[in-house]
Image (cartoon, rainbow, N blue to C red):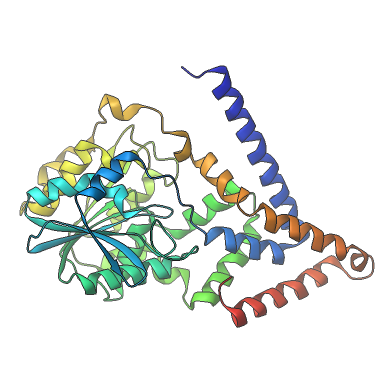
Length: 368
C-alpha cells in the first residue's frame, strides 16, 4: 500500500517531468534546430543505473574479460556458445538469470556491456555502435551458436545478422521492437520534443553515423534471416507494445511468438517460465513446438508486483532529461543573447542558420 510520502514523491516527480516536457516543447517551437541538437545528445546518452545485488552474485561466478573497450563475462566451458545482448541503458548482467540453466545444458555463456553502457568505456552510444560491438563479440568468441537479446539489443542483433557480421543458428528475442519509429515516438512523448525536432534529430544521427534508419528496421530484416527465432513479449510492456513483438514474429518465417502477462519490459528477463522457454528453445531439436501451440505464458504471482521506482519509464526519462538541464540552461542564456536579433531577423531564418552551424560543428569535431 503506497504511503503518503511515496504519493507526494510520485506527484513531485510527475510535476517536474511535466515542467521539463513543457520547456522542451516550447523550445521545439522556438528553435527546432538547437532543440534537435539537444535531443540528439539525450537520445545517444544511455543512463547507468544502480546494479542490484543479484547481478553481483551472477558476476561472482563469471570470468571477467575486457574485449577492447567492452567489459565482458564468461560462464562455463562448453563447446556451444550463447551470447547475451542487453537493451538500451541496460547491462549484460541483466540477463544473468539465463546463465545457470544454460551452463547446465552444456553451453558457454558470454555477456557484455555495450559501448557507453555499464562497465564499458564511453558515455554515449548508438544502434550502429551496439551492432558493431555484437560483431566484435561474435569474432572474439566464434562460433556463436545462439543469441538471447533484449529490446534494442534485439534490433542490433538482427542488423548484425543481416549484414553478415554475426552467424548464429537460432535467436531468442525478448520485447523487441518491429519498427524503430516506435522508439522515436516514445522518445518524443516522454521528452516533449516535437515530431519535427525528432525528425531533425534522426537526420543528424544518420549523418553522424553514415546509415539510414530504414536499413536497420527489424520488420524489414526478418524475412531474409532464415534462422529459427523465439519472440517473447509481455502484454503489459509499457515501453515497447506487445504488438511490436507479434508483428516481428509474423514477418519472420518460422518464428515462434509467446505472449506473457504481468512482467512488463524488464521483469521478463528473470521470470522462471521465460528462462525455461528460452533455454528449451536453444537446447531442443524440437524447437519447443508445444510453446507455439500454447501461445502464452502466465506470470507467477511474485512477478505481478509493481516495478521498482528506478525502473518506471517516467522516472527513468526524468533522470535522463535532468542530466541535460545544464545544457538547456546554457541554451536559454544563448537565446536571451540573441533576443535583440529576433527583432530584426525572422526567427525561422535565425534558427536555420544556427542549425547549420551546429551540424557543421558536430560533423567537423565529432562526438561531444
